[in-house]
Image (cartoon, rainbow, N blue to C red; front, side):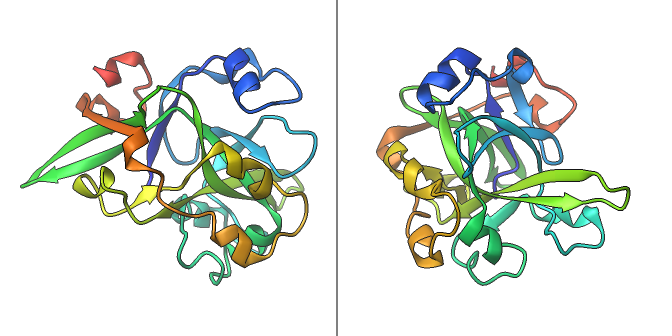
Length: 219
């Protein structure tokens, strides 16, 4: 699964990298320990391309209880086209979830070592995501999202049995197709990212506490 990640890239760089129609707000970050239920930066398949903040943990439109979002922070790429919580979103509501690194815990006996995974060039990237807008009982709208995961590449298989889907930039346009995209075309993009372009290192156990969000985590 993918349960924590970072976004420390400047708003100006995010605008350039993701070809945004407007500059992201300065209060966006930096973020060193993004955790489930928190607001995260997404680009939906609506035009123009802009950054929005959605709650991490997808709440399907038909859900009666928003707590379902706590268990829907990830969606398995292999079954996302069939699961009731995700299949409509895969066709019509896809998004990029912006990051520049993510954490996974490597088991070594009884110990769990937090590992920080990035692209080798240190550049920001995008997870493949799905989004929904849930209507609360008080009439308010709650935009939510989930990160799609897949099988691990050669780097990740030594750390964990799953990894988030990182989309290559050439896939952004298709993934962000406005309106409906056949599930088969969307699902074909949900592949493990090239291990040769990624790196991983151990970091502080401070990351275990979601209330801690500072650069010391990366030491």
